Amino acid sequence: MHIKNLAATALALCLGFGSAFAAEPQVERQAGMKAIGASMGALAAIAKEQKPFDAEAVKTALTTISTSAKAFPDQFPVGSETGHDTEASPKIWENPSDFRAKSLKLAADADAVLAAAPTDVAGVMNAMQTLGAECGQCHQTYRLKR
Image 1: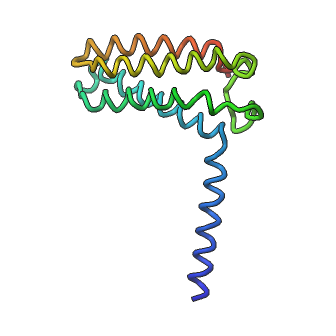
Image 2: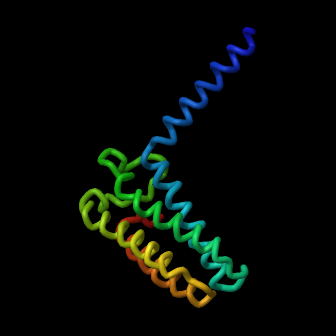
Image 3: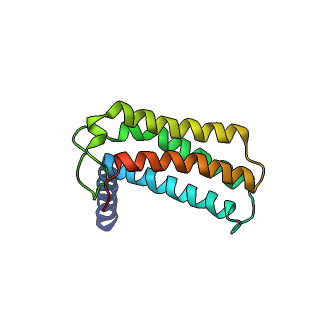
């Protein structure tokens, strides 16, 4: 009985610490950026014909990009400028309305591409050009170069 209580307590502590760590905005936004990066990678593999066209994979990637980009503006609260090896530029907090606009533009572009539902490699290539340009513009301004 004592071992079960000890194990339950240890599990609760681990879950509590994990939840606290996951709630950090730097961690959340890094996870979102990694999700977007993986999604862009999946689209790139199709565009380069390294993987066959897969409409469901395209839909999943575009949905992930849209969802993550919509969440970004709220993941940069004042006080989260440093920590967790963040690459966020101080310019985000100097011009939050522009950062929000850029993030929401990426989400809107992903939604527009999703609504048009690319049906072939050429459609995915066009989507990559549109979304890649948005990512690049935001990174130029709001990501620290390391």
